[in-house]
Amino acid sequence: PRVTREGRGACQASAPDCAPQNLANISWAVSPLPVLDVPLITAISSQSLPRLHEFGPQALANTAWSYAALAVESEPLLDAIAAQSMPTLSDWCAGTSARPAELVLSLVEALQEAGSLPEPLLAAAATALERHAERLDAAAARASAPPGGPLPQGPPAPAEGPAPRAPRVLLAQPRLWVLWKPPGWSVTVADGRGEAPEEGAAADEPGPSPGGRPLQEWLVQGPGASRPIALDAGVSHGLVHRLDQDTSGALLWASSYSGFYSARLQLRARRIRKGYVCLCMGPVRKELSLLESPLLRVEQALHVPRSIPCSQGRPARTEVCGLQHFLSPDGSMVSLVHIRLHTGRLHQIRAHLSHEGHPLVGDEVYGKGASAWCPRIFLHACKMVTDVGDGLVDVDVPMPCTLLSTVSLLAHVEAHSSTFGSQGFSEKVSRGKK
Image (cartoon, rainbow, N blue to C red; front, side, top):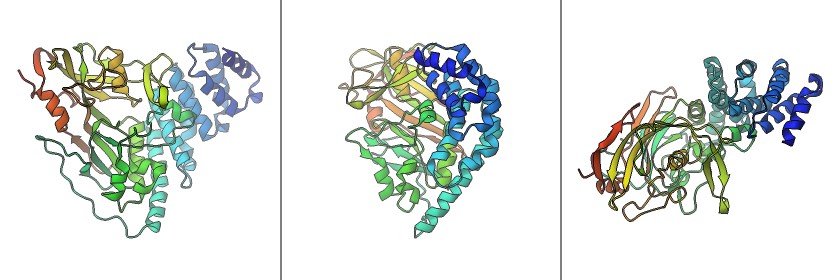
């Protein structure tokens, strides 16, 4: 390809003539190409290594993401990027702009993706982001009156019986809350992933679907009314991640900037455990324990995004922790699957299982859509485990009544059920007919 020829020519020129930003731009342009040009990436690495001190934060993050996406042996360069960045991360986050903080998060995620994230850099990133958050919280406190009220102490939804139809607080810590998100509520998460490194970090958070009730409006009018972060769209109103509009379950919300950046760092470093339960078509094989097809985000008609398995896509890992087989009311075989996500690509569970021939029941994008016996997509975020320094968050969220009603219509096929790799996500559902 032309970009490869031009990039090789630029990198094979004398080092002083190839500016650091050009090296970063070339590495970013090369990373999505279908053919791995080993001489070119070797040339970029050899010319970048002695000049990393000339790279700015954007160039360092871009280069780290490029080599993480290439999935090639580049430990010396990535180690050097980590060493060069570590002492200056607090300088990156000087001031109150969200963009430098996003670069820190992007660098952490790139190094984690490549398996080259050293604990000292993670600690330095935590310190830099905490100082950044302290400035934001202080500014918010000066601008708001009265200060935030007492934390609501809401018990988890009952283990038996239907979950509520409106959002509610399941757990409240000083800086981080776990919310119940019912189906039909949209979550807008805009985290600045429009630049190069964030695209490499998987820009997997589209806006809300038409017709959904915005959960951030419920926050502003309810439990977040006295929290300045709830009004700040630049940090997603404090929402740490998103769930699709028709997906129910656990959702993290930070009541302060300190909580937000601490949780975001945990998320990007993949220190948050998220468990899901879904119902998919066909008998999933017990050998299907880890799905790792790279996923590429593409735009469909009407600008509706979806993910497709593609060698040019971003790494994606979905762990199948346990499954049960059932017969549906129409006589077809279905599988209730417990999932743990190790990455967070757009529609990752739906795209991975569909690629294996098991689209989710009720999925209109990757499957056949709703049926008479399952009126919505069967996907539920049932488990959330994290710790941002205020104590362990370990929340189990029962399925809402719509999904429990669907399970009650299924006939259990005990001989084909199995659990494995539990990690806390292999609980059996015994509500189906025997």
